[in-house]
Image (cartoon, rainbow, N blue to C red):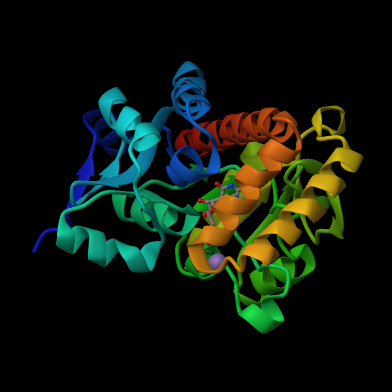
Length: 302
Ligand code: PSU
Ligand code: MN
């Protein structure tokens, strides 16, 4: 039986002709950003790429079809309908039911790879949660990145997570981590998590070189490009630390588990920072999309 994968005409012809394509995730639209800003953001994310000469491929599952590249009507559905957040293990279930959902980094990476897309921009990757030694809460994003040869641009991982443990897991899983113009791993709203990286690259062409070498070696794991926001644009660290502590306490008091944890923390922090974290969040996503666009251009030029 054929894979129920529907690649939009623009994405399909770009892939056929070796032109640059960047995948975008849909969970950030449906669960990571509040309505109605999320629809404007989803459209802006795509237009940043289009203006660079790169074809955007927003990924989601709609009516039992894996989608790579959405129409504007489909973007409106993802931003406005209540749909579940899908990791890879959820894909067979929604396909069997013919239903819809928004894809996490894990599911987006999986679908993008099946579609033949090599570069993917997200805001922040999932990772190991605080207290994971008791709860075992580790995002499936990490395992999937060990199995899918895609290049993901992310502003590190959010400080809602245990960053040191996340970096250790990335190492165990063989995921290649490159600081983009930095030696320090970013923590999303903050430029510098305090964790040093083994490797950094100066530009997009250097990332494309590593992609080519990884392919030559036949390695399967992803490349994670850690792209920090300039320090002048980060969230005020004091505002950040207070909101983070409060949000973690509230999640704990509610006894949240499973896939509810990450969206709850993200949206609670938007409220606690009076929207300041949201403005920074959008700049981060846009910054990552630009870098992913540059990498896709470099890759297509090889
Ligand atoms: N981190 C963010 N913004 C997000 C997410 C994570 O800064 O929107 C989303 C991504 O889709 C990521 C998912 O793949 O949450 C991870 O969820 P979980 O921790 O349940 O695996
Ligand atoms: Mn989890």
